[in-house]
Amino acid sequence: MLCKRIIPCLDVKDGRVVKGTNFVNLIDAGSPAELAERYSDEGADELVFLDITASVEKRKTLLTLVKDVAKAVRIPFTVGGGISELSDIEALLKSGADKVSLNTSIVKNPELISQASKRFGSQAIVAALDTKLKDNGHKIFIKGGREETELNALDWCKRVTDLGAGEILLTSMDRDGTKAGYEIDFLKEVASAVTVPVIASGGAGNMEHFLEAFQKANVDACLAASLFHFNIIKIKELKEFLNSAGIRVRL
Amino acid sequence: MIALIDYGSGNVASVANVLTALKQEFIITKSEGEIIRSDKVIFPGVGEASFAVRQLHLTNLFTVLRICRKPMLGICLGMQLMAECSKEGNIKCLGIFPGTAEKFNNENTKVPHMGWNDINIKKESKIFNGINNGEKFYFAHSYYLPVNEFTTSVCNNFIDFAASMEKENFYGVQFHPEKSGQAGVKIIKNFIELC
Image (cartoon, rainbow over all chains, first blue to last red; front, side):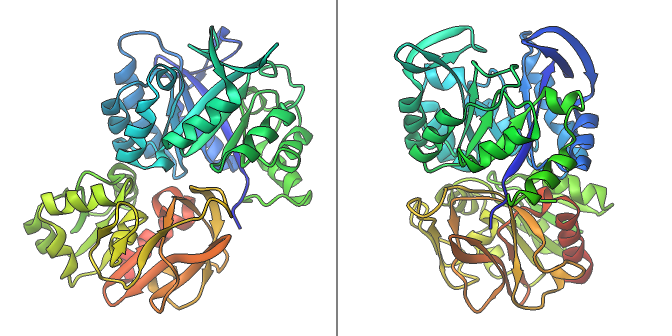
């Protein structure tokens, strides 16, 4: 039976991993390849790299990152952040990334999902969704959460999977950074509405939060950043905790 | 010399990284001649089946792979392309293994089948030397090969499907050994050293 996955997320700027809260007070946390190796040794099932570089050098540094990480670890990883062209996706996958996550670009151009999944397979295309609860339901936000769209989040989840996305990375902006737990009700709604795997993101603060997401929302994977970066939770201990609570994980 | 086939539809870089780490001599190639001159062939595959088969025809590799008599390891889509047909784009494949690649039914299970899953070894195979039964490997696929007489291990995703296949000099794995930690590296090492 398939295991539930634990995925550390690393923010990358100008080719270096950075740590911070809400994109401010960023501090250099080291090289992507070294951190990838550390997380892989600690038992991470996958990694996500989110590039927040704004410079024109972005493409080149992201490709270098992918090549370095692919040399360093033998676990799958996803890269995201500002990817909008089929040729960029091809270059990243060819360099050793397993998946790309697409966010703003697919809102602007939904056809990119179908083109990319036809060319590279659904398993390589992750739709990353930033959501926030508004008066009329959950809405989709783009450009790193700075811009609200008209899209209803649940409708958009169904749409991206119809177009061929192989996985949904669902981030709750309301919960992100709060350590108050994942947004269980909405995750549950999404996980039961789509037939692709769902990754929960935003809000993890302790080990029970992961258990809750797997048990109550039935998500396939849980993503977290600062909890792992600042060693508040050790991946190995988290997986042992989940295992003893009856969740199938890779130990 | 190992020929690592690059026909424009495989995650060649990750397999190449493993071969480099294992200090193997290899060549990344789409040349029929270089495949013929090699000792072993690794046939990776990621993406869509009908696109990949078209690439094999365009690079003139379809026939040489079919009649290859040296040890050949197909990975993921590479293994599926070694079957007779694929329902992904309804395409005729290499026909080395019997059977047709089918799509998982998303009424029963999440599709793609994505993540770490355990395999149940059904037949002795050199590629499983030193691998424990029940070992977990990384899978990422929406289509699968049904279990048949050439299946050496099975995996379960609501239904049982072939996690690995073997027939004469042909080996196939549905999972990604190059992305499956040390157990995956061991599979590639076994293929190189024992097959």
